[in-house]
Each structure stands twice: as structure tokens, then as C-alpha cells.
Image (cartoon, rainbow, N blue to C red; front, side, top):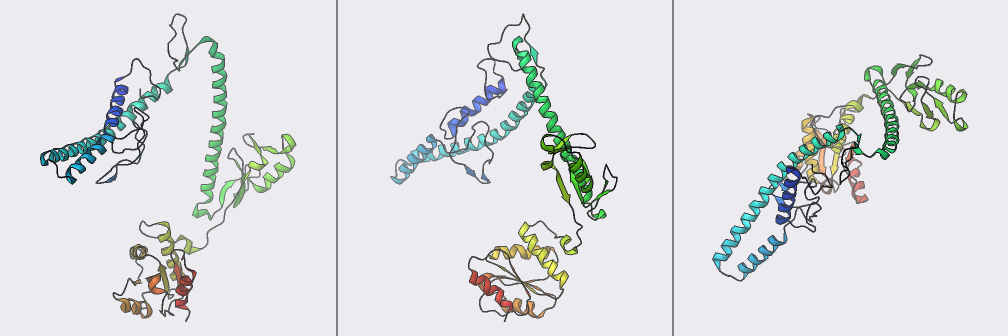
Length: 391
């Protein structure tokens, strides 16, 4: 069902319906090649924006106005411009509205068909995955087209070798994935805040705690650095003694593939300061930095500059969400009132101001910290903004 290479005979109803959808789509929208490989040049917009940012499965491309629609629109525009028969113009408008309705109807049908199509394709994929490989029976007629799960007698050996190779590759990949899982589990234990960044697991050789530094082999087993150093020095194997064998599972690991882990306890309290609300990474960084300033020096006053007023509005909302008092300068409205509140109110230690306003002629020596939300293109403006606090 719905496979890229279709058989000319015995098409199922879903394959036939898929062909009908493709054919109907080629009538409504522009295309370069008929059928399943049709390519469309533009996206059609409706009230909700772009129709679908995924690649339509039936068209393998994007939707655009068809040549028929463009021609009809050109004829209608010509008729309106030259004031031709009003009845013909009215019928043209009605037909174009009908054409738009057909396209909207197709979009809804397309969504429904894609869901149904994917469902049928998934069932077909499951059937293919669970179909047993077998040899063609002597009395069974040879199929006209190759069937994947039926092989000829002379193909048995080559398929057996291929499957054995696939099995070996799959086992190797499984071992690597299990090793990665084991490594991540050990790393998770070391990052537990209750342990202070110390891995409590014992080294399998010396039974001492792995601590904050240990080595990980490709199999995922972990050893302390001292034991790994002894193994590398005394028990290396292979060509040029460039590999070691795991003391637990005996899997070989090259010296270059040994990973060394170093963890450190996070003692800085301000790094764990939470930021309330859902904000961008930059806005969170600004709020967290302001919190750090208040944590280190509760009376410190900070200026926050940005080139764009919208960015300052977003930061203002984030500060409000985190219950942080601030003043904001956004034009002439309440300029002196907000500036005085920042200077003389001990509760307001943050001032948001646009670069073009705050970098010219203001003296704000009460501030001790300056934050630039984004890089300033003109270095002179950056120096002027920083100069507000140095007078």
C-alpha cells in the first residue's frame, strides 16, 4: 500500500484513492510534473497563515495558484479595467469564489487523507516487518515482479551471510547504546545535588568511591583514574598495546576512546537562582543577572539598555513576574517621575531605558551597574551608555 514503487496490477483502494488525490491536486494547484512528484513553487496563505509547513505527501512540494486560476484572474482584471459586461464580471467573481472554496475544501480533505494514509502505511510497514523470509516452493510459480520475502534457492546463502552481518552490526550498536546508557546513569548519580557532585558508585577494582574524577570505557563501565592508569600501563593489548580490556565484560576499548569525567560541586548560591515565567534565554539571563546583583549588593542600582523598546517591554514583564521593582523610561511620558523614582526610591534599583534616550545627556551617578541587552553597533553609543554612571 502506498509504496513509492507501485505495481501496475492489483492496486488497493488506498493506492487508487491516493492517485485520485494527486490528480485532483494537480487540477487545483500549479505543478511542473504530473503525478506523485509534482513540485509547487509558492505557499498559499489563508486566515491562519501558511497552510502547512510540512511537505505534502501527495505532491512532494508546495501549493501555488494553478495556471487556470491565474488566467481567469487576469481575464477578470482585464474585464473590470475595461468595464465589460457586468453580468460576465459578476459570474467571474462567483466562479473565483467557488475556486477558492474548492481549494479550502481540498486543504481539509488533504489533512484527513494524510492521517488515514499514514495509518494505512504504518499497518503495511508492520506487515512487512513481521513477514517471514522464505524460499520459493518448487511448485510455486515465479512471480513476475520481485517479492521481498520470497527468495530463490540460489539466494539462500547470500541472504544468510547478509543477515549474519546485520546481526553482528546490530549487536555492536546495541552494546554501544547500553554503554552510553550506563555512562549516563553514572553521570546522573554524580550530578545529584545531595551528593555534592560526587559519584557514590565504587570502583569495580579497588572498591573505592569514584568521587569527582573517573574514567568511562566504551562499554559504559566506570573505573577510578588510578586503576585505569595501572591497566593502561601494565595490561594493554592489541597492536602496539593501544587498547585495554574491560575488567568486567572484557570488551576492548582503545586508549583514545577512554572518556575521563570531572565533576565539581556547585557552591555558588546565586547560580541556582530561579526565574519565574516562560521567557527567552536572553531575558532569563538578564533577570538572573539582576538577581545576582541584588544578592551580592542589595542596595546596588542597575541600568538596563536596549536598542529596541519592545525588548525592554518584554524584560519589564519578566521583572514583574519575578516581583522585582523597577522604573522604565519609554519616551517623554513620565520621564522625570520615573527617573526620580529610580534615583531616590530605595526600593527601585532597576531602570530600563532605550539606548537613544539614555546615552545622551543624562547623569545617573546613583547607578553602579550597566547591562547592555544586545551588542551596540556604534561603539561611541556604548561608551556613552556606560558613561551615565561615571560623572
